[in-house]
Image (tube, rainbow, N blue to C red):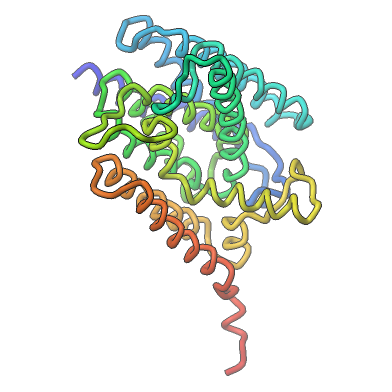
Length: 349
């Protein structure tokens, strides 16, 4: 019962602080990557990130969550990332400063023992240990930047993360300490979402998007010991708890990777703000924030369901990938060929 009170208090606190942020009007001018035209309060990420870290500190101090090196180093990394990202929201920093900060945060996670596990590789080998640590650092850098890239429409990232966290409870077998972390983050994001979707009265900014990337990676690492294998022997190259936690957002990860690849091939700067993601293409074709956000929410729910079926060993991972490839292809074709809204009204019969 105490947990329910804590989660309710997190939701109410998020609503109150977001309301205050709207009133304070700590605004950011829109950039080329944004889909709004007027300066809008952009400290919403500071609210749900700060509240989540505050509750995490309380949970560890009261033994609701075990105080481990991974939790400790994540807390330090998240605080560093929040400070730098909030400063970046107020006064833009160079990408080098942001990248160095992100690298420090990823190194802290690894220093705390947070490493992607591999059930089929001998992790006692020093070369394998080095590879897994390097992979973990690269993954965290990718997650932090990917969530920042796709945070361009009202509710898109926050709703996708909410759906992902809800599904994640199944493959961690609702392990109480980790579940309460999931639900606390859900509660704080929900409070923010009341002001962000669909009207966009406040945005999360880089403060919120980079924090969500770091935290998704942290929760995926924490899920590794709690993902049960039912009947089949464990043959996954990487721990299913980690992979499954991130898999529901596969459609958004594809959007980031495919866009960066296209820009690299065409010789464009990868660090330059742009509007070439599929989410931006749909919006620029006249489809609303709400339509695009709900479309990707459906995609995230679809992938979450497939991941759940794979977790229960109702379908194999190869079948899951096959279905995903087909669905992703359909989405790419839809975005490429969907007509421009508004032009149809002026097209002669």
